[in-house]
Each structure stands twice: as structure tokens, then as C-alpha cells.
Length: 165
Image 1 (cartoon, helix red, strand yellow):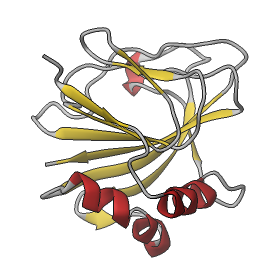
Image 2 (cartoon, helix red, strand yellow):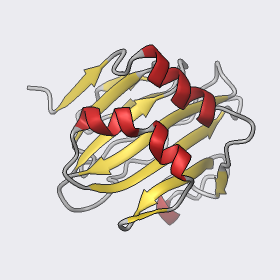
Image 3 (tube, helix red, strand yellow):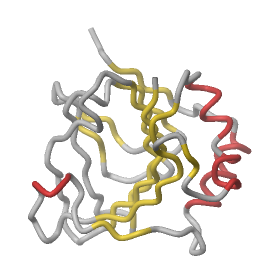
Image 4 (cartoon, helix red, strand yellow):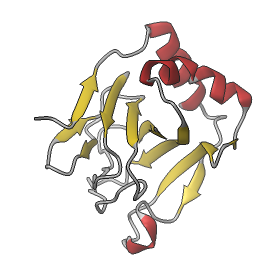
């Protein structure tokens, strides 16, 4: 039995393209993170860029970025949002698999929304690999260990990570 669900073409093309054009844009603010998975990850090649949109009951970003995510938030029917974060994993000229991690230690749901096609993927606790495909939504238990990867066929692997109840 799968403890996850993959939904392709989850949003209407217009909604998807608005999100993609806003986030995969030179003017979208991305912030360097020296590690991908906590301070346990000491590999110098393991870094990425993030943009925290929402956390701790407050909007940490532009109202516009919240607005464009409304169709996605409606689709997942969250009772409460814990965090919304954009992840951008740069191509470092080799394929990297990051350390296993759980987003939070308490029981909650995760939605991982892919913005671009690339050869990167997410590895679930049971070893299942979910490929990055634009407009694809992965619904899973993000309190369980999972892993992210880089990509080697695009400049960046972009996704939106939503933790919710």
C-alpha cells in the first residue's frame, strides 16, 4: 500500500504558468543555505537556495507570492499551514543525493510541488523515487524520512514544499 499520492497536471495551465513565471524568475528572491539537511550535512557540495513564504503563523514573504499559491493551497485542502518554502537545488555538475530527513518530528502532511522537468527526484522512506516533473504534486507523510537530490540536466531543480495539517 502506498503512503503517498502523485498527481500530474494538478493545476490548470494558467495557474501553473503564473506560479512558474513568478518563482523561476531572475527577480524572485532566493537565499543561500549552507546545507540542505540541518547541520548534519557537512559535504561542501550540499547547498541550495530557499525562499520561506510562510512559517510560524505568519507570512514571511510578499502577499503576491501567497496569492499565486492559492490554487495549490485550495487543492490540498489544508486545515492549517505549518510552512511553505521554495527550494532551488543548483546543478553542481554531478548528481547528489542529500541525507535523509523528516521536515518536522510531529505527524503532519507534506505536499511537494515540482515547477520544472529535470532528472532530480525525491526518495521516500521506502526507497520509491518520485521524479521531478513540472506541475506534479507529491502528497506524502513528510514526518517520515525522505531525501532530495540535485539535477544534472537543468540549471536548477525547483519545487515548493508545503507542510500542513
